[in-house]
Length: 72
Figure 1 (tube, one colour):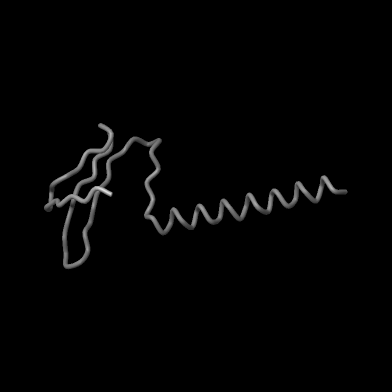
Figure 2: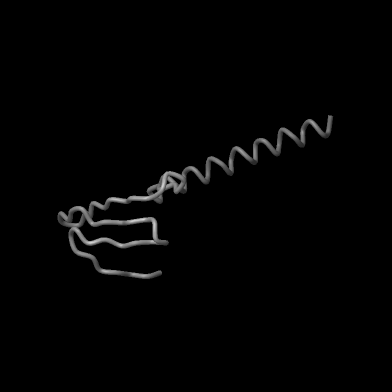
């Protein structure tokens, strides 16, 4: 993991086309802005993990249904 220090209004550039900018700092919260191409998905980590879990559960159910059909 790369750890960087940034101040308000400073930014990072990733892969020449993604900018992460520090918009505000209040206490222990940091507000960031992300500029990225439309084809780049950006999620909060907890939401990303929920999506991954839901996808896994859905694929497990689909696999079970296919297996049931094959055994009939």
